[in-house]
Length: 181
Image (cartoon, rainbow, N blue to C red; front, side):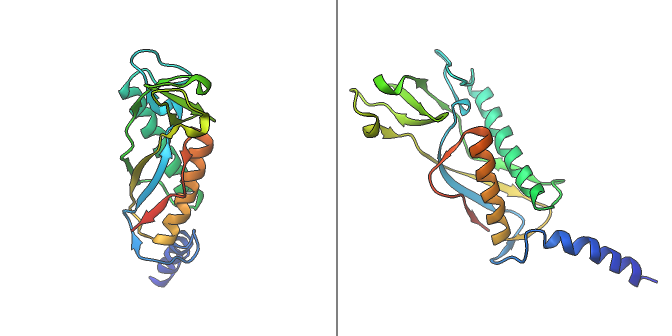
């Protein structure tokens, strides 16, 4: 009598719980993903002269950052068979105000773009491209999920987030996204 509904419930819930495969590490419903990156041009803005896909204001750049990151996280969660209902995404990424210049004649206070990301800070005098200062930032994404997953499951999701942000938003990462339960 009650065994049939319980069995049906188990047959539906168990595959969802194991969608990423058996997990390792501590289970958590609120992982933090940490990473180092150079922002894509669209995550930056310039009040003076927006160029090459830059946002026109800080608010527009922040909205783009938030949308790109939320999309990447939700697509990654969904790709493993989990519902995205109730999943909340918060990030600590802040837009950067930069003036973009050509990498061949890059001087302060400008920045240079490589492969769609603002990867270099220009110096006071022109130097070779390889001698420019790296424009790298450390940041994080915190996900709140109605379902606790193992840390290794969140690491798999982090790899997909990395992939989506690289291919769809143009983020340049330095190392993999690390996950803390």
